[in-house]
Image (tube, rainbow, N blue to C red; front, top):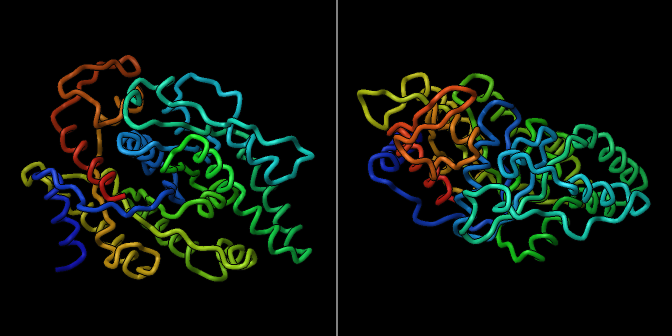
Length: 345
């Protein structure tokens, strides 16, 4: 059986039989990440955040300066404290202020869908993260030029230490991060902070190229991520826990069957994964693949109303940007796909 046949077979089991992964991967911390925008990253993080919070007390954080993940979780809420407030003294030192004692907000106070469950908290994003890379690499280069390996490691683990301390205070057993589509700064620290990655890949040429680039960044010893890991004394590389193929088209006459163009991109993505199999937690990288369809109106409703896809009610109408949209029956398939992804991790 080829990797593509395996992935398509599992997808049919998910859509037609409500198949869930028998065992999760038991990592405690994840980052949703890719080196390209427009692949559905923040929407994926939002939906995955909801599913995780049903089973585990979970701490979220937004490392993207655009803060879309924060907006989905907090709506119009304007936080006084952000992840930048924690990172700035951790990176620049105590002369720039003390780290806040409490940097998280309870999500259910801002998003009704998150009421119940095991508990969910968000450390919000901040537009200041746009300028953060220059601060981080200035400090890293200073520490490295002084031969201070411990200082390099401390800087690279600055985000991890903040989140682990906050999760401990909240008794949160899982951590989920959303990242920017750029490697430098917050995304770099996110990769150093987590045990595993969830990688959304849209079925198009640029996204396939970005998957290849991400794998090279994670594994190539002459690229920045591994260079700094080595300068810090050999930091671990996060495993890829899932590759989520997004906006996959389906054949209406063949249920749970992606169209030919989507199949071609999925096969190419599997090929890249097999070439970098050492980055994956699964022995067979094909087992890490999840197919999610183009969510159409359900996705627009979910984002606009800040309601996770698994909580949408089929046939219910919503008004989005002046248009009346209905949650159609295809949302039932989308719910199964999201729940399968959550069961994998």
